[in-house]
Image 1 (cartoon, rainbow over the protein chains, first blue to last red):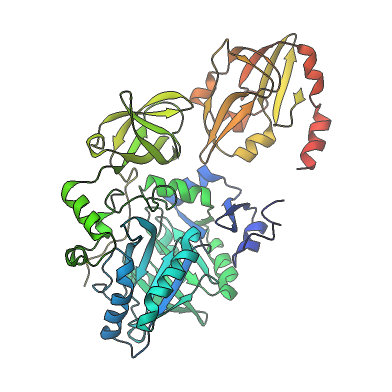
Image 2: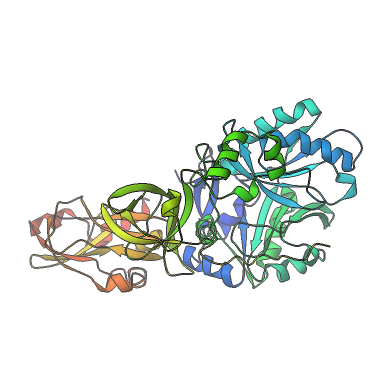
Length: 388
Length: 121
């Protein structure tokens, strides 16, 4: 049975649009999602690097955390204190309108999911939190978070019945500006709630491609109109999950369930920037002792980038060798359309993770040369502004 | 030209078969970025993996539709794997096989039967 007709798969507010547009639908995290459109993964990837792509990421898990009491800084402090015990990051220190990449932690400091968490900009929303979880983790995440914040009177309001649309690429800003006049004022990792044709729209300057871009959370009722509006712009093409994966790989961004899982710590994953030093000092963080030890002494393994020097792409599961020693495993890998060669990421001992180290990867029982490479493989082009 | 249910085509000249993947298969795979070919001299059985094609997204086996010995491989695909998408049933051929049993090709589909088979997918 094809994903189009499989009743067990969930749809998004845009599923019908994808099927009409020739999207090749596949099962992903319980949803029927387009892996590519007629352009194909390679050209979709290149289009995003040169122009702007629209991605339906409505399978992900947006949610709002709502707390009782009057809006304001005090309520934000209460909300932050309620959620922080589960995550690695500093929520208390978020400024209004600021988004942060953070990690949902297991008791031992392993990674249960990676999340975006944000503090609304609007004065009347101070004390609410904006959150986006991964599709494959959202049910567990939501249950865990709802239980955690309940004693503070907080509740989790799912927003995954809405559409989440990412617009990414060097022309994304000019495209979005003609939709929302507020867009240029946003800098990378900030959030705003706006009104579009009378409907509530959350707009975040964020993404998963390494390019400048936006993520729009829109009510299901207006999602097809918004999608159609975007695609009517010549600079915009619809982009499937295939190119989303190759884009994030080039950007050196880990993918949960592949590069990250409960056995991996934030320090091993090279995500120490997402671990709040303030909170680690107090010890009030899941796995605090482990994380502090790994920061002080170095972890046993680290996530490293590899360029495959010759031969076939080294994909997830490929062994990484130093001489005859099997030192690690590729967790994501594939062909980089921007570089025209195979790239990968995987976990190796820190001694083998120095940039320039020559290693080998084993593909179909054949060893191929590989070199440790700094990530991102392709430079990020985020829109950073002086804060003021 | 004969066709397999795994979407390989076979063009037979005497006891040598030229083998590639069909236009349908090339389209389904999408942009091909790497082709892993066997060494000349390799013996393959029907139904065994003969080559591997890699798209941006995934690696897929190309099955040997017939048994034989690899007599030649299309080295041009190493530098230009995109030829498989551009001309799957011509310049995008993969290997030539010296067939163990040329008569076994009669068990494969002709074009009309293959096209009818595609309609069932």
